[in-house]
Amino acid sequence: MPVWAWILIVVAAVVVVLAVAWRALAARRTRTLKERFGPEYDRATRSAGSRRKAEADLAARQERREQLNLRPLGSEARTRYARQWEAVQTQFVDSPQGALASADGLVGSVMSERGYPMDDFEQRAADVSVDHPQVVENYRTAHAIHEKATRGEASTEDLRQGMQHYRALFDELLEDDAADRPVARDAAAEQATADDGTAVRS
Image 1: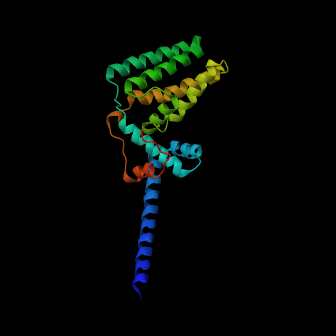
Image 2 (image 1 turned 135 degrees about the horizontal axis):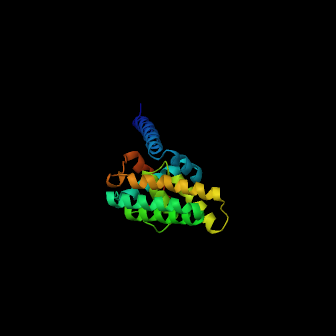
Image 3 (image 1 turned 90 degrees about the horizontal axis):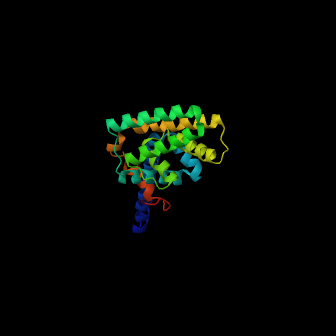
């Protein structure tokens, strides 16, 4: 058999091995991100329009999260915020819209003290999704209701639901101890960022 034929065989074998390895890596990446983000994985996939873009975005969120100096609240701060929330709930009886605005501000204060950047809501939600994927949608829904209320379009039931959604995130932010733990990453998740040019390093 001529040398060039052997070369072609070797090249073909290498290509097959690389293809198999890549599929295994992609499957691992998908599994890791699904386990990490739960329902947020499905939302990201719908929003991005493709799994590849969604996984690159989620991997980029993890990378950005690693750069944030998040910190847990001390016991005094948790007690203080818990009392403030009780006051906000009491306010709801007489002023539902005012109470929702106070809840929005209180959640923002907790996030700021924890170390979350507060410039842009969508970015805040993306940052929160890394450690709190189960309740980040509550945060988005509460924020949407708050904006609806500022336009005078929210019913009392809307406001009540908004309070419940804010409370879901508020409780996790108060009790969470993940701020002082590094975000779990692996080569598959890192590869998701490298493989998609749309993922922006923060």
